[in-house]
Length: 348
Image (cartoon, rainbow, N blue to C red; front, top):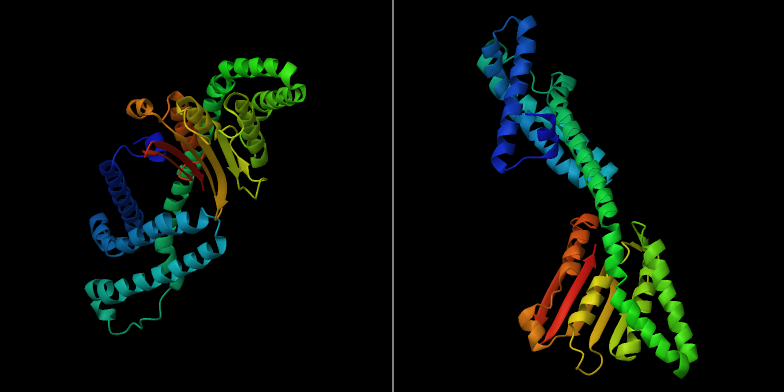
């Protein structure tokens, strides 16, 4: 086994179990070897005697690394962790004493069995003997988590560097820009003030995409402004009522990954049925119990339903971004029902 194998994970369940079994055999063997030298007891004899207590060590170790660490320490519930650790220490002491008093001493020192008081023993030794290996295993577990998080962060940084230009190109859709400029050109003579307003919104979109969206996270308000400007410019083509944006966000200072929601809007515009009455596309942004949800609904024609209304590479990239930026803290669902395609993102 290499350090990389130990710290980066296992290929399957059997490999995990085998590694743990080898660890405990090695632990008992090392303990028996070190203690047998000065104690004048054979290695195998001490190995057999150690098996009486190793079950407590195993129980305490797994209780610490699989219950206390993830549920308290890693969630920064330090008070609960300390209290639980104290309770675990007391339980360790009692279990070791029970085994020692009722099984080990009667087996190997029967002459002492009737002379020993249950509550008179070395409390410190009873605790340390089991907690030492548990703390060592916990240290390995924490180191493994740290290495995994560091590797994940490095992978994210590399992904961001590699996909930054592709992301910008996919979001600054040339077709959208050219159509917007053509619409603005038409508005110049018909409605100069509206044309000027549209130019300003287009410039705000370009500024956000080129400069502000390069950050890992942005305030929710900036993302909302970007969505509003994007929708407003599409209204030049579809009319003011075709796309309905319902924003119910109260905490607009909350941060979010930039341009996370726009693929759903682009997908609705691309695949949505333009022949239906307004609103053809409804967009709903809201928060409930600290969960932010973004829902886009659009009508789809029978042709789109039979083909695929779930989008192409843009939606695939969106799923990947969610997995990287919000691991186990998001949900992304799509469905088609009664000719309406619904896409929903929720961030926990």
